[in-house]
Image (cartoon, rainbow, N blue to C red):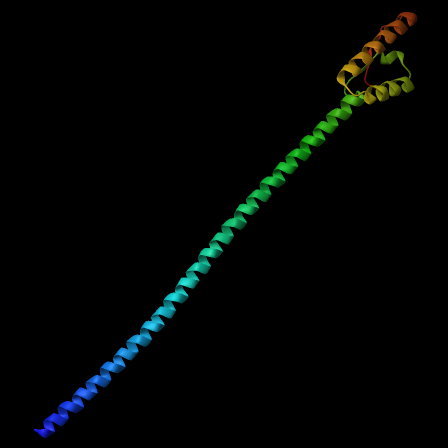
Length: 150
């Protein structure tokens, strides 16, 4: 009987040791599982931050592209307006009434003076005075005034 008590005590001690070892492994596994979960969470957060950064970069590129297109459009409009202003101020595209009655120097002076005027009203008045002078000149020379573009 005493032998069976010793056997029971040994088996009980062995079971207690196995149980303690299993508990210790469970604790260690839980810590490792917690560490793995933390690592996975950190990786997921890093991926999310990278996606946000990529979205922000894409939006910035789109805004930059819009700004460039707008700037190019504005520059094109400015060039067109400048060309139109230059043509209007120099009388380009427009003929000179009575140009056939004027010398080349007079035509150049007409264009320069017309181009120097600031408003459309001033240009219209200048052209009216010029037209009166050319009609008088045409009457003196007995010639019809023509519009010339040279």
